[in-house]
Amino acid sequence: MNTTSHLLLMALFAGCVAVVGGVLLKDTPRQQARAAAEIFGSLVGAALVLGWLLYFFPL
Amino acid sequence: MAARPSTKRPARPAAPAPVASPAAKPLALVYLLGWLIPGGGHLWLGRSMKGLVFLAMLPVMFVIGLALDGRLFPFTPGDPLVALAAVANIAAGLPYFIAQALGFGAGRVLSVTYEYGNAFLICAGLLNALVIIDAHDIALGRK
Image (cartoon, rainbow over all chains, first blue to last red; front, side, top):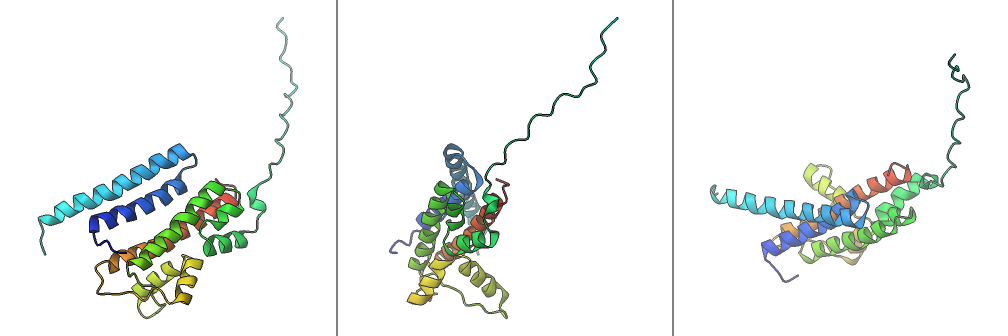
């Protein structure tokens, strides 16, 4: 795979986990789509927030 | 004089006819199918849509992990973290054995995407374990 964009790979990972998680947790397609969107948003949002917080604590 | 209420108990509603339950399927086979073929347990239990999504997504995650230079960890009991990662890799089922047989999954530590690859490979296996547990619940009639 040629891409080395961390943001893209993180979003791809979050998308895969969200789809599987949403389908696993809920039973109707509408609920599954909603759950997947929530999981995706939570994962990406948490990663961005943590990333910005770590900006203030450089290694 | 008020009429006394009848002492006769109301007739019980007839018991519902037994519904064909997926619990009739042997659990061991559900586990084996679910492990070897991601989503296989769901497909066998008649949850086709869920099964197809798992069948598509989990191998895709596994292949992305290999493409990102991730490593299929060897089972080394002396190194607990590596051993746990190996268990997670093996939980992916047939994709793991196919990749091993074809010589993929050596891992390239110097690659920029090495850790991402490992995350995809390990999570594909762990999610498959969750899928097997879900199939177990369906087989027992809990879902």
